[in-house]
View 1: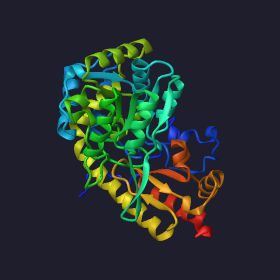
View 2 (view 1 turned 90 degrees about the vertical axis):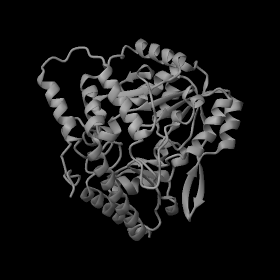
View 3 (view 1 turned 60 degrees about the horizontal axis):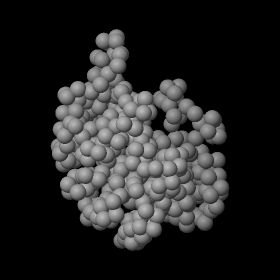
Length: 397
């Protein structure tokens, strides 16, 4: 019997919630169902709420820094859940992973230096590279057919050729990959890592989705593969995606290499944002100490949501292809069989289906004709959204 009720709907409108409260400011009517930004419509772990309330009762919220007990909790979680042994001195606090990526770019490259990514990919990678006046290099993922369905792979030949041609200094890896849902195998990570090692490229590995992996797949922390990889890697982790804590602004960045760590730490100090959120720390510690039973049930629920979407699309929207995810709570839907323009597809999804999804083009031109759908929501809400999608496309069957 389930201990947690993920079917429960909690009204988020009116809480200054990005997902629901700013539709009109973003050009939407406000009537759309929201399956876009990657946070969840579920209550977090009860023990996290209890820990936050208990800390709030203290009544004094002064300057705060993490002590050894905090770091030991994080270290234990990384070893038990992700088979990666780390040390206290390797850790750097940051308010979020995008912030950490931006600071790594500033710390380890100069204006005009090349940074490589693999589109379609989480769009802030592009924004952080370009906003910091670095040269964006794209090595697109390859679409291949596997068992009759689209599957994404890294293009190793293109990746290394572009690294050499553009003298790339930094690679931003998405592991697991947002939005296509790949959980890179150890062999794939070794192959891409060896290219980076040979060419002196530092790897920033965004592993925020690492707790969402479907049965049959295994997440590997890139830096855990070898001492050589560990020495050239900045691993970005956070409890915020896993436990629905994005508003608490906390991340734990792992940098074994002392020289790299000192450069990144110095850049964080320059930003003036080198003291963590007091409630973020409390939530992280509680999450990693008490959150596993909740997370296990959540992943079962998400698996059920994925099964529903898979079967619904197959039966009611056969021209849409679901790119089978190996991890994350995001699905990547391929609408290209309809042969619609970007504007026509948006019209169908937003105006007719009355849904707010992430347009695939947000993740690079390789995503045009796709949409990213967040399935971390109560089943009834997801069912309603998929039925609205069906009605909008019924005339194009």
